[in-house]
Length: 473
Image 1 (tube, rainbow, N blue to C red):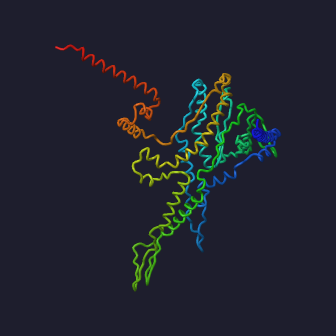
Image 2: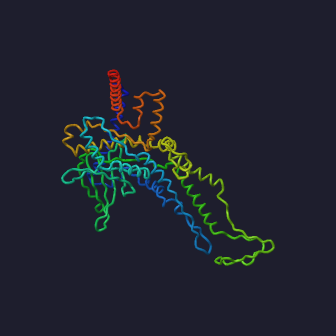
Image 3: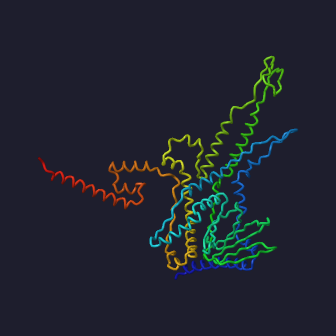
């Protein structure tokens, strides 16, 4: 073995030992019920999440908390407070393009169909598709969320359920990973309310071997230890930058000019009368039909303004283009759609190119997390179905996940193009069948077409024989 390879192996061993040492240190603190020191040694994200949520919640925007305008001797003049929830729209759109259409799980080993049926049973009973949408939306708004798998007894049988964890749902998330990004400890702090309205503080810590359930007791913690029968930390962590990352200043500027323009509109909503020269007999504002007299060329007019300056209008549009463009989002306002020609499937794909590219990028991150979840569910299956585990069928189970396209298929356009290619001699019948979006199993469809052609040839041959043998008079 070369010196270089030995050096690499030694470095890897040192890193692994360091990670194991940190985990062992945490486990020792857990065994001593010292959850306070455990929390201090785990990474927490409350500060980062707090900033994200202050931007995500429109009621916390600066635009929603503008001070009223002070007036001498009068009540303060109310100012416009018009936060615009761009962040919510951008985040919800990103989730819709990634998980709006349900993806599909496939079994790549047909010898394990029974295990795959049980796998899909867990997927359906834990509402995988709806929970991953919820987790993705929360991660896009808060930068992190998690899905916790929990085993429990139901009618004497072990069952499984899931729970989505997030700061906005009352969960404070903690974790520790090794140098390779592998999760070695996960913690969750939360509070519950008892029947007598007492607040109880909890801190649960998960390792691959044990689960430590802590409850605050006086100045310390009371900890109950459970064996982790799954053998894996039963948590999937979803972590990403906020979906509006990089455009917060643009959004704040857009809200600012929206509020200022609204203030101007309010100011001119009650017209101000402007007089020139000599004006006599100004009426009471509440009187109607009064006569106002002017002398010596005097004039009266209302103080109005025609419209916002052109540069202000341009700034509106520029800000919105940048907000949508820099976040790879689509402007789906009514005005945008109204100005489109009749949209076909391909036209919609062109309009939604940016969010589709964003969804593709997200597929790398969330595809890896779904692969982890598949492996976690297989580990859970070994607890739920020990007989199947003993036959090794669960280990042989080969499950993959395919993301679905968020766009509807424009089948008519595809069929028209295929027919044109076949009629023009540019595509074979077999190629047409393979490209047909209505055909699920093109091999089986080709066999059917071959049988139909053979039957038709036989029928034509029978007709010719009948013509030959038919007696003539």
